[in-house]
Image (tube, rainbow, N blue to C red; front, side, top):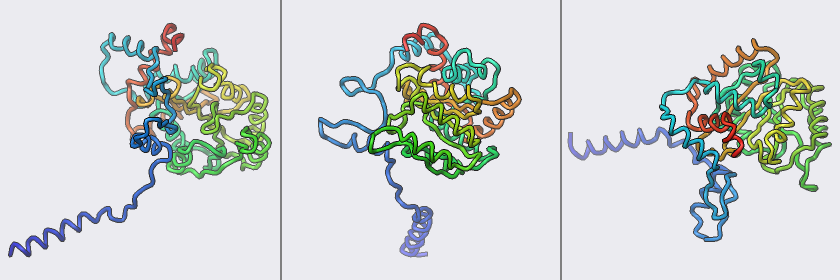
Length: 328
């Protein structure tokens, strides 16, 4: 075989194998993270990053909370290992997470009426919840989101295999909550559907219902037999008080709802890159909690096997230490 022919055959083979992905189109940049990429490329000294919500000091530099620094110092003294954590996260982290959300004296915490697992921050918690609902929710496999909502909500639930629809929430004319519009739309949602609610510090508007409005929303949702899925990514950021910011979640439980809850410690502890979060189902019995927990672990195992341990340890160190929690 001549060298020329061999070269032609080689090039043909290379072109053949190069064509495996020729049909793949260039995807658009992420609407949120893409802003950060544009910020990094901008040479204007007066530039301001309005993309990812991350706290910065007066010089525009990342800020690590003193409580986090102290927690890591205490952890280093313990000389912890880097072994795999449990599939659902450590019991300590899960207990601290659900207690922060529901309160120290809550019966669902005290009596084990919850199935709580660690998620890959809030995004991962929502994804676990979406996968669980797609597989086990006995009602309509449709999630109703407020308009507008966090940009990642729609792809998270669609990738989970759920349909996504909207209900009115923000009124651009008043720059406030469209209470009547929300009630009207919620009342039209088919029974036994899923409704997503921002527990506090609504993203992206920052507009939250008043306590009396939450009470009315709870009543309508209960009358319609809808399943509430709370996303609580900013506990402590709306009022500065973690208990006040969890008031809507606690109200719904008091009103007799069984809920799903996604939590994130990215914002309120500044653990953006540590990806510490939790997903919980509030159940009516310990047996329900045990069975749903077993299925949540089965969902997690092929998804990412085990959650990262470092961020969860920081959370546990802070919430489990009265002094650190006070500093936080």
